[in-house]
Length: 287
Image 1: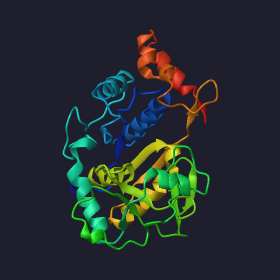
Image 2: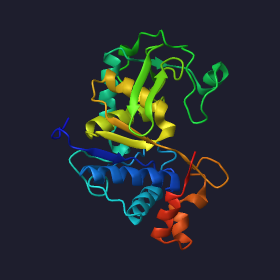
Image 3: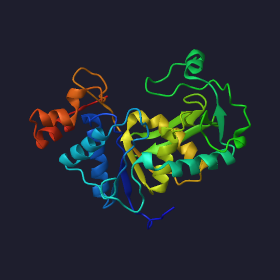
Image 4: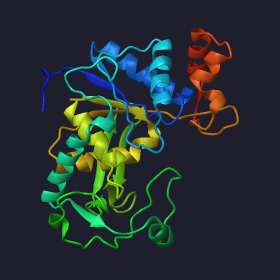
């Protein structure tokens, strides 16, 4: 792993190219860019294109263009290179496999044969709409992980320390605490279709790219607790976290990519100037 001088700020933008950039994410990315600029730091753009079924090249190109149109600049990324590349997750499989092997060898993960249908029928507690259901523990006692030379064919779950409170001091929202086994269960780190899951990919990438501060939306607070556990198991340094308030549209709905009319691309195509879009972003209501 490359290393940086002490106290060197490294932040990141991590868009997923499953749609055009909407105003909520644009607001988060503007905050990330501002924080990096204020600290004379380096800003990295990482293309989180893990899911081949949902990610599209047109959205990658659109994200790069729209971010630049907003005035956001980055120093490392898939379009400009850098010493920590590649900067697209679809090209970083070897990093994820290395992390998976370390987790397997350390006894942190186990293979899970449960189907999505099994999990839906077993769910007994309410969950956030965008969150992973709490796993009922059906395969938790399996101890055959070391028989697998490759992760393909089954889901791989991280065995959380049930009952442990995972806390961190968020730079925007203050002290946050989640209890493993209650607020979240054993979570997927590798999917049965042989793709690294979001949690593992993000932790490995942030460590390998020497990210010192993660700026992202408050919808990922619980994911931060999971990622702290993963980073601890992999002996990675824990970055600082700054979670931005989520925003809603004029109807009170949380802003998402399904709101096409709230995309930067739509506003550009309908004649809005950069200054008008930036003003609209600044006036977004908190969710």
